[in-house]
Each structure stands twice: as C-alpha cells, then as structure tokens.
Image (cartoon, rainbow over all chains, first blue to last red; front, side, top):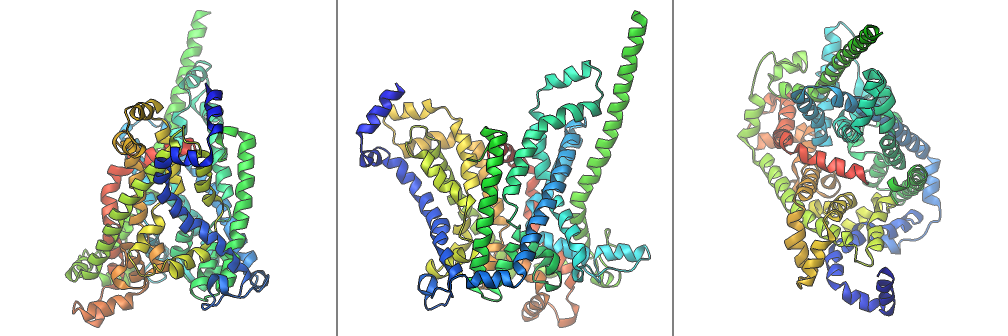
Length: 314
Length: 307
C-alpha cells in the first residue's frame, strides 16, 4: 500500500505536486511571506557586519570594511563584559528558577486543600501576566533612594539607606530574584503537570514498603521529574547567550553606572543601534550573538538527542 | 507474633502520619510565603497609589497607606485624553493582531499537521529554522524602517508580532490529534482544503484556539518593545509604552497636565501618580487573569509535552 503510493508519487513531476497541493500551498503562503520578510531577508542583512554603513548606500550599497566592526567590538572590552554577563545571568536564572519551581511544584502537588492549591497557584501566576514596564515601576517603588520601600524599611530598623540605582554590586542579586519572581508560577505549573503524570501505582508500592513521604518524594517524585528537568534545562542552555531585553532594559534602563554588572548582549546591541547609531558595530555584535546562540543550541539539542531521542527539538 | 506485627504496622502508620503532618506544615508555610512574595509588590503599588503625596515624600512608600487619598486617580481621570488614547491604541492593536494572528497561525498549523502533505517536513523546518538563527536586531530593524517603511504606523505594532513559531508548533501538535478520517471523509465528499479547515478543523480546535489566542493577546497587550523601537508619534503610543514614557519623564507629564489646565506646577503628586498610572495600565489584566489562567496552563502543558 505504502510502496504503491510512493511509486505513484515518483511518476509525478514537481509541478504535478504543486497542482495537487495547490490549496494547501496557498494556505501556507501568508506564513511563508511573513517569515521571509521578518526572518529570512533580514538574515541577508548580516553583510552589514562587514560594512561601513551609510544611509545613501543602504544595506547593500555601503562599502565593505572587512573585520573592522568586529575589531572595534572586541577591542573595546565590551564584548567580553556583555558575553560574560549574559551567560552568567542565564546560568543563575536556570539554577535558581528551576530549583524553586520544582520545590513549589512538589509541595503544590502534596498539600491537600483544593482551595488552598487553587488560590496559591493563582497568586504565583500573577507576575507572569504583567509587562516588564510594570515590573520596572514596581522596582522603582521598591528601590528608589528617597521614597523606596526598601529604604523605608532600612530606616525603620535604624539602618543607613542604600543607593541601589547607583551601586552595581546589588544588581545580580536583584535581577536573579526578579527573574525567579516573574517565572515562578509558569514553571511551577509546568512541573506540577509533570508530577501529576507520574504513575500513582509507584506511590502505592512505596507506601506499602513503608517508605515515608519524604523518602517517596526523594526516591520517586524527583527521579521521575528528572527527564523533564534535563530537557528544560538543556533547552534553556541553548538560549544562554540570549538576554531578556525587556527585563534588563526596564529594570536598569540606560543607567551607565550599573553597566559593569547588568549590561547584556541584547541591551548593548540596542544601545549601540539607537543611541550611538553605530550600525556596523551593532550588526557585528548581533551576528556574533546569533552565531554563539546557534552553536549552543545545536550542542544542547545534540545533548538532548543523546539523552532521549524523542525529546530533541530536531 | 501477630501482635508484634500489629504493633509494627501501627508504628509505621504513626510515623507515616507524623511525616505527612510535617510535610503539610512545610507545604502550607512555604507556599504561603511564596504566594506572598509573588503578590506583595502589587499590594505595595496599590497602596502607594492611594497615599497622600506629602506622606510619600516625607516617609516613603508604605505597605498600608497612613493618609488615604485618591488624588492621583482623580487627577488621572480628570484629563484622561492621553491615557484613553493609549488604551485605544492597545485595544485596537490587540484585537486586530489577535484575530489575524490566530487565523494565520491555525491555518499554517493545519497544513503542517496534514500527514498527506508531501512537503510538510520541509516547511516545518523552514519555520523552525528562524528560531535557531537570526540576522540579529540591526538588519531586522533596518528592514522594517528602511525597506517596509513601517516606522510610526499602527501596522508596525501589529505585523512583527503576528506569528510565532512556538504557537504554530503548539497548534500543530493539537491538530495532529484530530483523526485524519475527518479530513479524508470530507475530501471524499468533495470539500476543498480551506473549507475543511474552516468548517471542520476550526470548530474542533476550540480549546487550542482559546489558549493560543490568549497567548497572542497577552503578548500584544504587554508589548512596548516595538513601540520603543518604531513609534515616536504620541498618538500611536500603546498603553505599556505610554506608561514607560511617563514613568521616565514626569516633567513631560507635568507639562502636559499644565497645558491642559489640570494642575499648576507645584502640586503634581508625582510619586503616587506614577503608581496610579501603573495600576490603571495593568488594571484589565489584574481583573481577568484569574479567569483566563486555566487556558495558559493548557498551553504550557501542551508545549511541555513536545517543544
């Protein structure tokens, strides 16, 4: 049956297929156009990374300048700083967020009260729904030097107020906490779903064997969650060189005093493009990020494939 | 013999029960703390927006307002023209974008879910590759500004966000679970592919459409990034970007308010006004999210099964 179908296909030419799938191809056309315009054609714009951009020449008419943009980017010392920050932040986010989410997921599964679970879940999920601009406003409420809540509390305890928006060293902690806060509900629900999927017979067997509930969690729930954890973490590692622009930009903005510990590749590229208008150099930095991202995602996917073929992205 | 066994089982059961109790205590306490951690900032903002400006200046933001005042809100609603216009932009962008985005996403997903479509693998890869590699911000920006000439148009707030590979994948995996027999029998009855999609597949995909539709709508509602890059005209500012602008530029706010005669220079309650604006800009989301969160849970779990 299958073979006969293929034989028939082979006698058909390309245009016969086009005719056969005419309606389906038409239905795909808008999406294809969309991704051509907003993803594939811009890929050709990578040539900008090797050009001295001017507005009269445009993308393709501007003169080539070899690797000058890259030399500029790497020579300034910015490249190392933003790459390091991007990777370190993402590693911290992956570790802290996943540990917290698994912890909350397990507890949410184990506690009895249905209403308690519902209300907690709703409260944990709230930060997921608000924009980064609103998060920025909340941060202002908390961290402002004169009127911020943190300093109100410190003064109330008789301590010196802290100048958070002028001190780079506070920010890694702040950003890790904010990221945990924003993603807690989302991840908890993802893990809760995975826990709910664990075969209950295993729990019953453990109970008959006299295992207490903590042993059951450590010996059954956690090991059974590991496949999900590994996949999610590997995929997150694939995105380790992509900074969350919305978060960094709304929390820190263009506050140069904090760049040493908060500037990531995405904010750097944005700033070079919009404030200093260094088109060639920001294109070079963007290309560098895309390449790094591509290589890490391929490696991560390779790792997922080795671990569990069905879970790999491709 | 049997009595000792009995004693042992009761011992075990007792231990199991105390362990359960201990876990319940840990569970209730930690989850309550985490839940407070998640909503605490919102309570702070609400309370700050309801505080007397002079108290804020003197004592800072408080968790519970000592001098209750709705000045900030009444000022905001006295001359609401800018805020309303930003609301209007956001609502129209969200409606149009979600409608078209959902239609195109599901249509694309349906074609990719058709097992008899010869090139489905190739097209899937065509879409998927864009998540692996991109030209970066600069070429994308120049494409939109210099070649598509979309700067300062309503379209630039809608178009770039209309489709997303992740949504196509989630939708496709949902549609793959619809039996092929439905498409096949409709074909035998002489229905075209588009008609099959609109009349059979769309009604069967309601849960997935609701989920993805809400994901798209939330992304449009919360978008400020496209406005940051492409919008300089104040009449085209969406809500979140308007909030962003106002938070960073209270002087501009003061000028606008003075021009409209709302305030004289000195008595603008800057701090409480910022917080009131934050609440007004978030408002609808805070009200509807408890009712729509179940759809997001659906989307997350579908997406987690196969990315």
